[in-house]
Image (cartoon, rainbow, N blue to C red):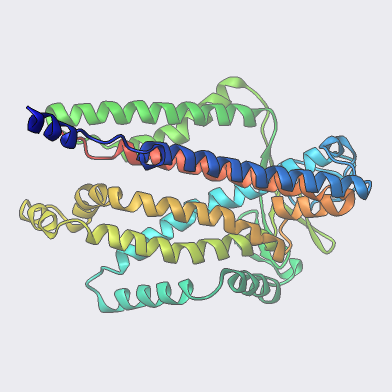
Length: 396
């Protein structure tokens, strides 16, 4: 009996100490980490506010409603020195978004073409595309921006000897002048374009269901082009609103009228597109190579052309590999647009630099720059993640 009791006493589990519990330790470490981060943040904010008060520097965003007093060379919306700092920063944000969105569009197209060319069976095409990728990836972007800016300014002729490639379009060292449209009818054109996009999405959904049921392929591309051209024109014609074409004309030493793309904008766009397209080309090449070779052979055995095999069989599967690294390239092209200040393009960073030099509100200016780029980057990430989930394989 005594042996049984002693054995039970020996086998009884010991209570674990408080600190030996992994769950307790995890909670304590997390609390300490949060407290440390909060303490550092509080110290930085307190120290900053103290230094500002000692130097009699006011804080806040009240300066945004004051008159800016400086001019902006170009912008999506009109701006004069009599406008407020808030409108000036809005112009900078729109300029950044314009060059970022156009850069993403053209870099994707050019990078995709070069990425496919790197896999070409033609030795010359494959070699030229490989040299392009290796050279452009290894030259700093800032140096490329300076190169394109100097090329445009130094090699382009003056306004009086400007190139005239298309009616109403002039290319000179003052930039690219092209016709623009004014009037109330412009709003109806945009409304018709938005309606055409909706029609195209509905038509695409119908064409996909029709192909799944009958196996017949609908000419979606040509129909979409017709809708995008006819619907806006029809909306403007039915509205009866006025629409005028403003064509640039040479007056004195420069052009007047129309729309101007400055050399700074052109150099920034060229630099961003050429630099980023080299990275996108590698992303596209690796994505295509990730698709099993048997997919090519199976499609070729059915008598499908190589161009259709690439577009309808290989690329849809490669997108699942391409999209995640492509998101990083889109974020890079957006953040790299901040180098525009080096060549004088009035982007967000350039406008806020001028603003904080005049007002002394450096902290507010830096916070606005950080908030703007963070918002744009998160928006791109959310959209690309949504698209990546949409094209992901669904297990059944």
